[in-house]
Length: 307
Image 1: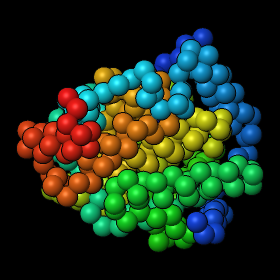
Image 2: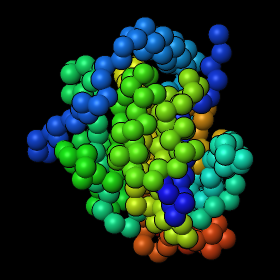
Image 3: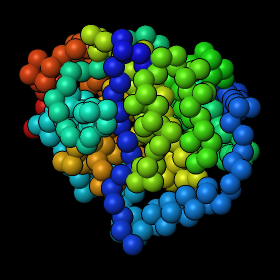
Image 4: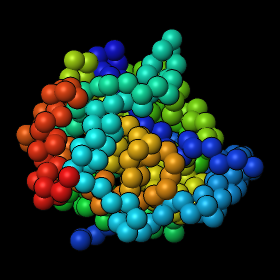
């Protein structure tokens, strides 16, 4: 945002692979026309289809939740929460974002979260319908887990957590719409979105006012060209990260918050992270040392005292 806002960034899909009611309607911005160069989107689509196939052939992008072979207790859950919720994945240095983990403070939303999705004109109607159904169910699940008011709204102008599903050329040219949606968006955040590298399938930026650890705005960007499971995985990870779980941690298992991409969808372990995050005993702005004993107490309660 402006200089009075600070952003937390999470990127997904960066691991190298080598050689109840009515569904909300989609908002399609007329200023985001279908790409003039469909071959660009086809190149991107082919890349991610190959990537998903390779990952799944290696036994990654699992959808089983990992309960059978990835047990965890209180100590592991508390450690994973600290590393995922209380560390940042990226730092800004010299006008660039660098992948370097650093301690941070607990951040989350205090007011209602109104999620709104916008599909670019290049997204086929059947894909929009599938995604809206998935998002509706997932947003309701996030609300249940956190006990926080989280909803999916029809009008993007009423949203404070925007989900943009755009093809490559749409996203590259989306700068004017972004600055209209988020007045004062800083140049680095704008470049990060419009210049999303092919190594990343999606991202989320969550914003808090300078000096505050309370999120008030967020924007998630998901490539429209992604195959179905990768796209669903992006929704699961980016929306949860935008609620206040910004980091990926290599030791977290079973979890989507791990760049190895072993798991494609939110796991039971990750559900517990969200329950801890929105427990009222924790307060936005807490440091790792301040939060640590409270997190352990909550984890003990959630797991029935299992170490």
